[in-house]
Length: 231
Ligand code: AR6
Image 1 (cartoon, protein in one colour):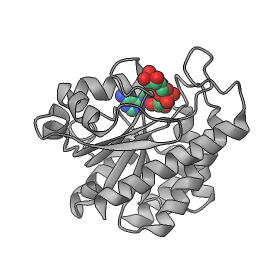
Image 2: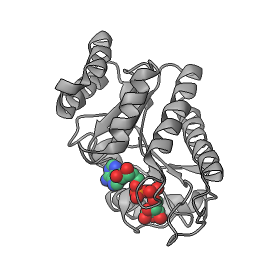
Image 3: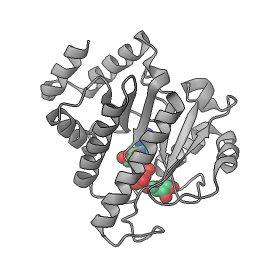
Image 4: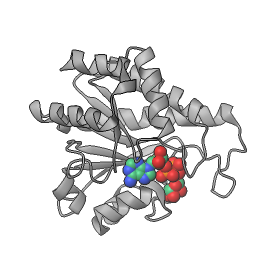
């Protein structure tokens, strides 16, 4: 299976995302890799307007470093659309770097419906949060808080009341949450990335020296916290 996936990454052109999604879903059933899988959105690249090319380099670099340190875990970058530019940039760069394509994958789908709609098991999901750790605001933050119900808000409050850019917080998801029951998500990790949107707090005024450093820190923090859950 592994060789097949590697091969597909190399000749990705002719194969659609749906097939690829199905392949990863199948694989996840076989050895319970779902309990060691983190699904995460591309932090800061939509509402926070971070440059996609720079973000894709940072995702691939931090993921590659992390996967070298820990085996037996899987990282899944998720975005909603087959046309997602961040997914295709990351896919290209990951295959150039020869990252193990069974442990680092891209997936098209809604991060709140990976199991029921995508057939993918992921025990931990990341959220591109806001500094107040509040629901709403659109994007993946609104989707996750909506899908998880009120219990995520309560559980989040117990863990932290604010985040600094470049940091993250692990929230165990209560078993009453529909996201836990339906999708098998046991933990949500809120991550605050750098903001390049003048309308949002902590605006970095296009300072990509600072911004890139913070995005690196954000992914390192996310991956380390994920490792601490599954180890
Ligand atoms: N499933 C998977 N990916 C998604 C989903 C979903 N349901 N929804 C969005 N994405 P964004 P940011 C992708 O804007 O740029 C919020 O208002 C999306 O296509 O959610 O870090 C917060 O409250 C993109 O690739 O997060 C903050 O204030 C990625 O998720 C602010 O936005 C991140 O897009 C954070 O902005």
